[in-house]
Length: 492
Image 1 (tube, rainbow, N blue to C red):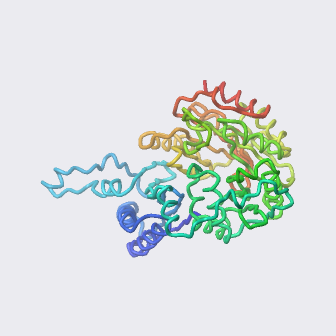
Image 2: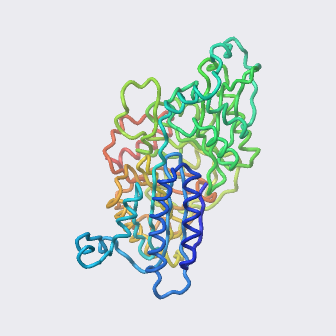
C-alpha cells in the first residue's frame, strides 16, 4: 500500500525521513546495504530540495510517496519550488579536482545509488523525482530447494488428490491470512516455478496483502484439507472496484466446476463488500481468459496494447514476439443513477455504445464554458517491470497541453517505455476541448474505464512507442473486436 507524506521544508525533517526510508526499504525487501544506498540517495535529494527549491519561502511543503511491488521499491518526490533543469548542472570531475566545484555531484550520487532515477518537469505543476531500487528476489528454484531441506517432506500430491471426488466433497471459504501457506503450496504444485506473480511463492507476502485488505477471495479445499483452488480479486487504492487478478485450480481437479464455483462466490463477496464493480485484464495471446470473463457477463470496455512483458504460460513453445496486450473486461455490481458525461466528438459513438453494452446509464452533455483550475494536476505512475506509464488527469489548468507535453518529453528523454496510457475524466466538462488540444500528440483510442479513479469514469488513450503486430492480438467477443478495429485503424 502506498504511503504519502507531506513534508515541511525544514532541515530538521531530513533525519526522521531517512530513518523511515531505511526501515521501509528493509521491510519491503532491500538488503541492509541496498537500503543504506537508497536512503543515501533520498537524503541527498530532499536535502537539495530543502536548501535550494524554496530560497524565498521560510515555510513550504513538498510531498513524498512511497510505493512498492514484489520487484522494486519506488519513492516519488513532488515539489513546486523554483524551476530547475538538471542538464545545466552536470558534474565535472576535473572541475571538482582542480577548483573544488562539486556542482551536480548530488545527482550523480543519486543515479549511482538507484536503479532508476527520473526527473519529470511538469511546468507550473512543479517537478517530480522518481527514485526506484530493484528488490533482489533470489531465484525461486533456490528457495524451493532450500525449503525441501529445512522443512519436513510434503506428502505426494497424487496420494492426496483423489480424482473421483464429486464437487460436493469440496469446501469453499473466503481466504484468510492463515491460508497464505496453502496458497503458496498450491501455486508451486500447479505451476512449478513458472507462475508470473512471484510474490505468490512467498506466504509472508500473501499474508501481508490479506491483512492489509489489498486482496480478497476464495480458497477451495478437498475433505482432507488440501488446497485445490484459489481465486482472488485485488482492490484498488483509489476507487471502490477490484480486479480479478489471481486464479489457479490444481490439474487433478479441473473440469469439475471448481473455477466456476469460485467465480460465483467472488462475485457474491464483491456484492457483500459493496464493491461498485469488478474488472479483469484478459490477455490477448489466446482467448481462454476472455471466454471465462464473458461467461460471467463481464463486457469489454478497453484494449490496452503492449501492457505487460511479465506473462508466462505453460505449453507455449515459442516466446511471444511482443509485449502482451490485454482486454479490460468490466462487470458492474450495482445499478447507479444516470450521470452526465462530456465526450470528445471523435469517440462519442464508441464510448456511448460501450456504456450501453455495460448497462451503465449516462447522458452525453454539451460542455458549458469550463472553469479551469489554477494549475493542472496530472498523476504519473510508472510500471518499471512492464515498461509502461499511466498519466491520470485530476485537474485541467490553462497550461494542460504544455504540461502534458513536458511530461512526455521528460519520459522520452529518460526512459524507454513500450506504452504510455492517458486517462481523461469524462465527468469533467473541460475534457472535449482539452482533447482537441492534445489529439496530435500520437495518442490513439484505448477505451472506457468506468469508476477507475475515485468512482469517476475516464476515457483512456494510449501512446504506443514500439512496433506491434496487431494480427497477433486475439479478441474474443464481437464488441471487443469492434474496439480493436478502431484501435487498429488509428494505430496504422
